[in-house]
Length: 170
Image (cartoon, rainbow, N blue to C red):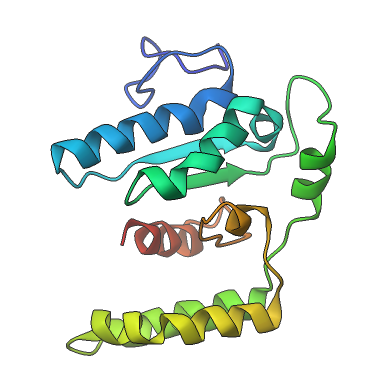
């Protein structure tokens, strides 16, 4: 059908007529997970067209303050039922994160995993990481909502994509 349909895929956790509901539904699932005290990963995948939807903006506004962990994947496939218009669509078309920062971040994470207590070191260095990132790029829309942005990443390159998704689970 092209939309979320539980009858078509076991991976569709709910049914909807527009992908713009993905972030709000995932936020609800993450909030329920937090209230239960469980630790499953919640991932919302939405195309760039969904980010022009008001309910998506509402979810972005609440994710950082309402849940302890949730991953949002923006599939910038430049495809939707109709042409995307407006400021958000224009912003998403221009959104980039400096590749040098992403390389530095991946190397640092890999190095810290090799040391006992690497998690504590990572927390200690988080402020320096933020400042390093700010040196390369200014804040973007997602960070203005209090979310950590990582990207862009080629979703067809699994050797690159999977480590980033593992990083997001932490």
